[in-house]
Length: 629
Image (cartoon, rainbow, N blue to C red; front, side, top):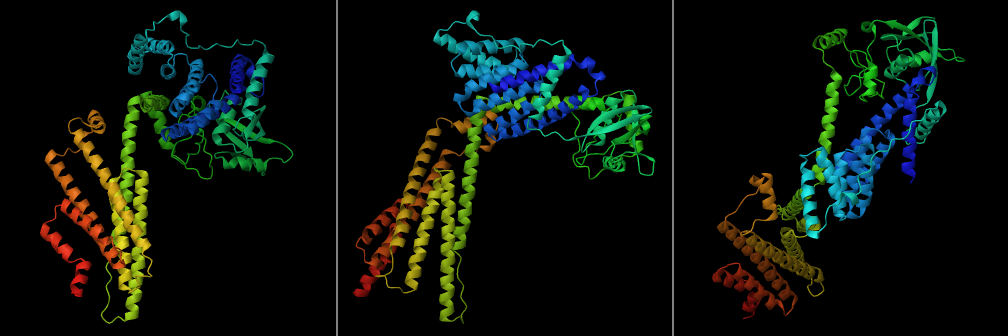
């Protein structure tokens, strides 16, 4: 309840200040100073709005709401951007969850109070009403939009959808029972001067309590001939601000020079913001700063600084009032550096402008209008139902890309772990053992890194079967490395801790089994999609991006599936074969079961009977039996 009451005060203050504008010239603190503050607040609100739009695009809806609310606090209630910001807040609530639709409706109501014919707010409110099953209210809002914009595609789509739903439910549209959109109730203007001053004071109090920190003001005396007037300037006043204040105090002269009297008594023209500090230093410590105003021809008026970003702070014709009215003025906060433009450039630009007769401000206004329309169009596109499907597809692609990057990262570590060890012929036994141990530890570390990368890829994309198969191969090669290092070191196998190696074999087989099942499911899904195109393919064709989707013929797909199945079975059979060797050496009786399982895998892979027979013959169990005979 606090926010709306504060806003009403602000509106009444702005209205009262308008009624009191006729008496402003008689008072020293004219409302033009207030207009300058309002311009600064509007510029700050624009920055807040842009930050909110960026957060909205990043899907940080709570952060965007905070930025939009701050921007609204800085704007006058009657400002058109207030409706736009309220509409954006409503869009944020709509994106957060359906439970926030009531808040979105409230924001749309506030937007329509500022601009009753704002179609964006009407459409958002209609969508919320539709989602909340208030179809009659949704139909009412859509009809208002269609009366304003008969060719609005979004309104036509919602209207058709709502009316179909109403027909199915047997709801008849009755205009008498429908609540019309809230309209702006203008506040009565107060005629008395005292009330007007109170309203202005309320606005100033609200500004003091706002988040914006106002700069401290200094009192100076402006001297034009025998006319001396008191004015207030900011502590870090720029030349642009100073000229604005001078023109507000002395609206008659078209161009002026601002001078100060130095310690030697000479009048020195101020051409840069730094020279204002010199004027303060030269002034009487017990008195106020005196600035002497001299009326000159517009050609004699010195140029102002140019901002660091390259945008000219002053307009070429010296008309600063229009520059502040459209809100396009930007004050250069860093005054440490300034540049100069040659006089002939200014003269030529002024002559060219007068000859052609164009107004440069209109182009800036068109640009601002174009950017505003663009952002509104983007907002409609982003919040539509069709966009959500595209976002889901994009999310899947980025997810797959991130998982694939980690998968390839793991492959790099696997390749590094397979590095060969080259020994010199004259190396001693001790040095050879040290080199072998160092190479073993280095390879183990690389296998561990590869395993971590594969696990990270699976966290990003759990259905990434390639990562599961690669993780199984990594664990198998790590177990094999540990086993052969133990054999090469001639350790006592009875006391050697074999549990770690067997655990690696178990994990490798589990990952192979999970990866194979996942691949089989994906293959079945692919076969089903041969008769019916997938959602991804249909969407890409609809967007005209089917060129990125490569179609594979049935024969090629079958050949690829056969090769993949053979590779999986060969790798799985190799794991089981190596495990049978380890179990035989350790004296486990189940080694023969692993060997038979390996033979079955090799048969499924399409290995020839001759190769399988040679493999069984080369098993260490057969060699031991032959040695025994």
